[in-house]
Length: 365
Image (tube, helix red, strand yellow):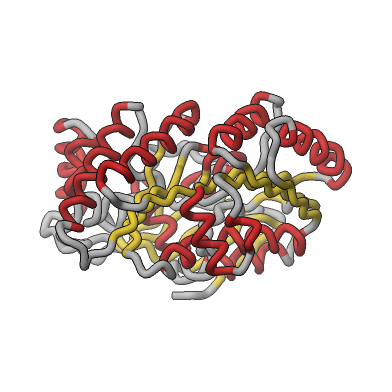
């Protein structure tokens, strides 16, 4: 199930089986001057079928959206073995209910996705990246807000906190990261002339907030050097020897600074390191509770910290998951996240499509 069946440049469409990796698809379409924007940071190790099941996102969501925004059609095997085709290959389709989106993000509970028809767009001809280190998270968040207030729409806006940076500095040997309390990555893409005009303007915005340093990357090779550091964050945290409980919470963008302040308080209260990094452009911050399960009451302290985190995120109008889904890990907090009526509707849909409960049993529905 790992074949790219078609890339049609005139239709701006790719048809792929569910076992195709994100990286394989992106590289194949880019050779044709096309672009598939959804970009989970672990793109070499995730697959289109899984991305559809969780409605995965990644750093480029701010400008380009998430997986569901690129799914035009699906082949799905239902619980009774029937093969269902929903959607199609046109970029607009309003024929009946939007069943395609019903299956996107359904976590394998409603059907097994075997083939996906994806929308492609023209490949931006040029990209450039700025990476800035700051001595405070407040300065980094202010810089981010001013970039957006200035009318710029970066393809990515990423933030990382001090614990993440310290781990990354040790893991990668990039000592510059270790002196920062916050790290901001800004990527721009588009026409070469436009980017060469926008890049210094965005850099001026950043420099008004007194960064410790600003690095530039122009063109694919230089940008990838910066992004490779970002892609090392998860491995760097695992290398600490602590168990990484990775929560993909989302807050309204105006609450970013409060989120980082809140997680700092949680660390002290529960005596657990918390590492935060991720897609600040859309408020989706990977909040990693770092646990040594050999310590006394480690599980209880971790659960208490997560209880407080999720309750606060919901109180701000946020969501307990932006990309990974509920699955098993967040099953305990599912009743907090949605109303009883919404949970009942989920169960009704699940029963209609899978009356015997054989698809991904034991999960949140």
